[in-house]
Image 1 (tube, rainbow, N blue to C red):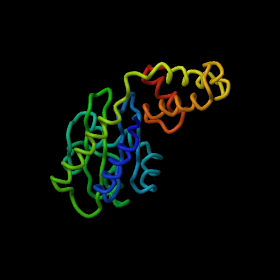
Image 2 (tube, rainbow, N blue to C red):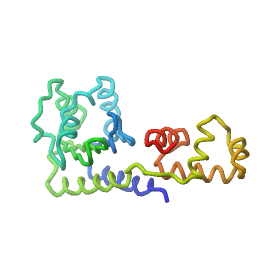
Image 3 (cartoon, rainbow, N blue to C red):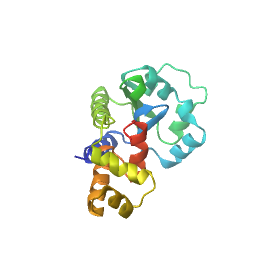
Length: 203
């Protein structure tokens, strides 16, 4: 069963709770999240990315050392690049962060408002959403043999017809196996599913 609809529902909830947008990094491994969603002002996202601020952001630094929920204004870490000052110019004047999970599979989110600080109950709601997202998006520990074989054939360069023939199944059966593998891996495409399966050492 696909977990994507449930993840989409939680992202929509997070969006409603974050009037000035949010950023999500789910299960960060080797400095990269397995799922990343940016819902801030696109101009801010472009500016942030162009300046490689993820490597300098005090919120991200806090996320790797702290647990729970905290307002940006309460994070006592240096901001030598004035990232928060610049963010405010794009409407991200007040914010909060949530961090959870083991250090080798960390989830870190930022949420923002332009009008006021987040209230304690709002922070608790957002933290609950993030904890559920973290659990739902947990990388699988195994795939079925049928899913593995289907992904391997495509990874080896076979087209659907050739892969199906080699596996002795119909093309529609192959597509069904690939669809189920994508759902299991929360991947939008087969190539993304193959990449994730390799990262998780399932392929």
